[in-house]
Amino acid sequence: MEKKYTDFRNNIYQKISGYVPGEQPESNDWIKINTNENPYPPSPSVVRVLQELAKNPSLLRKYPNPNGEPLRSSLANMYNLKPENFIVTNGSDEALSLIVRIFLDQTRTAAAPEITYSLYQTLVMSVGAKYIHAPMKNYTILNVSPEALEESGADVVFLSNPNAQTGEFIPLNILEKLISKSKKLWVIDEAYNDFVDIKPSSFLHILKEHENVIVVRTFSKSHSMAGMRIGYAASVNPVIMQGFLTGKDSYNEDVVSILTGKASLEDGEYLHKVIQSVQLERTRMMTEFLDRNFLVLPSEANFLLIQPPESKKAHDILLKLKEQKILVRHFNSPLLAKYLRISIGTKEENNELLKAIDFIVSS
Ligand SMILES: Cc1ncc(COP(=O)(O)O)c(C=O)c1O
Image 1 (cartoon, rainbow, N blue to C red):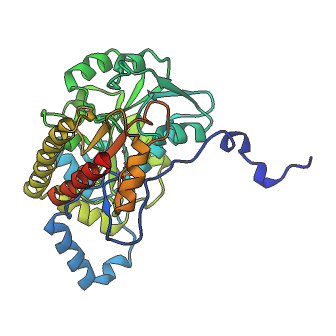
Image 2 (cartoon, rainbow, N blue to C red):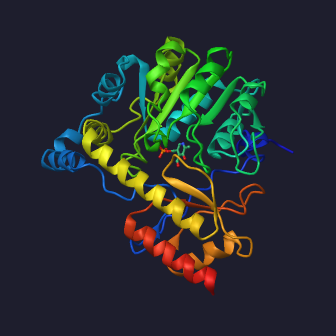
Image 3 (cartoon, rainbow, N blue to C red):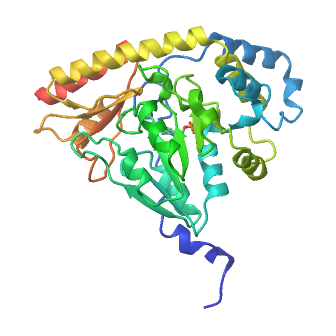
């Protein structure tokens, strides 16, 4: 048959399924704890920047700084690195996407834990690279095995730390020991890292000694700015950073995101308060679910992966919660089907959730 332009790369795209995002309802009358957003508003300093911009709309007339300045320098100051070590991106998904485009092709292989952020697989397969599911260390409580990633034979490995879907955090000293000897490129995705109790938790603090690491972070979770789309990647390897500059769009991050991101980053006091509130509620909700005989995986993130007592099916509970306008997340994969993932909401939202679950379980 004659070739059509629509055949282009069909050999790749027919084999993969796109990332399935959590439901985003149109109205605001839902308790929405399905996509790990932050239940608290962004810093008041973000609002002040928006007000300033509203007074000077002419600021939108010009293109933004192509390197995300002044946010990039602000990040460098915060982590005692150089501005050239950072690339500011349109959400951390863009950073992940760039990494895949720049470092992978049909001759290369990437690995990630069997249970993790599913976008890694979609992105890797979209460029025709091979994707390896590294086995978990333990299938009862779904522990990640960093050793399995190292032994996977992949060129690039993705590690979400804390891990997406489970909340498990791998301490820096364990990772560092492995990575110092590794010949692979390690992508450490720290989307949930600000919620970790044990400090220091970010690989950025030890990045200087590791040229084979890219750290990826986001403002979507701890900074309550998922709607703004602000992320970044950091590396001390000049070849990697040159790759980012070559591969990125000319103006990949907008003025509003750059300026509000900087304001949020520099309001450490507010960030600390928000993180503490999430951590306190996380501890309380763990106890509440354990008291109700749920299995609760230990989490250092802003969500809990919970398994309802034997008699009740996770997906049924999700449907019944939905009838009460409460949205939680369920993954229909063999290892996760028994679980529900619940983002940590405000105290009031969490209480509503517990009330609804008590009603469902007792009826
Ligand atoms: C592990 C992980 N990485 C990255 C992202 C993407 O975040 P962003 O909103 O910065 O694109 C998410 C979103 O949920 C995530 O769970």
